[in-house]
Length: 201
Image (cartoon, rainbow, N blue to C red; front, side, top):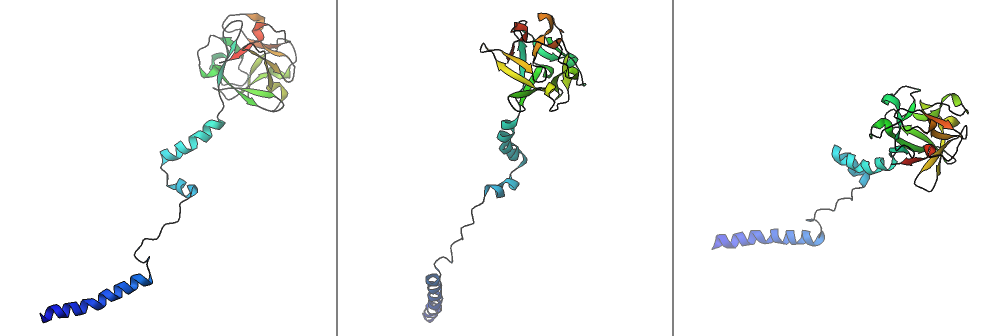
């Protein structure tokens, strides 16, 4: 009986002390709320896959769109012969296969003109030697700001466009309106012929 009284006597001050501490500091037992984490702070802790997924939409927004360029008269594609990556490789028409040497991106330069860029080589469609002659060779060459590397796309409002060289004011043309594979692509005075009309697919 004396021992129980003594235990109760000892516990009473401890309880009083705990109560006083809680009254004095009601949040003492609570865990402090962390500061909110910003997106910038999260990025370094994302895994490799998550970082790639997060970056993907931005990359896609700036990625060029490569398309087939199809001649109206023949139904064949603007093509770099032999899929060459060499400077001065010739532009021809060839049966459409969807290969990278038949895929082209129109990259705006200024004033409504474009570079026409081959996917397989990253080079630009140009008129050789800055020529202004009818029948001048069209080929690929490392892109520059020179006017013979720039083309204006003119919508013909029939699903097709013509491409007019900035330097010569002449049109991208399949020579002689031939329908044969391997026919060279040249520049020629704009006539409105179907061998100067191109559809982007």
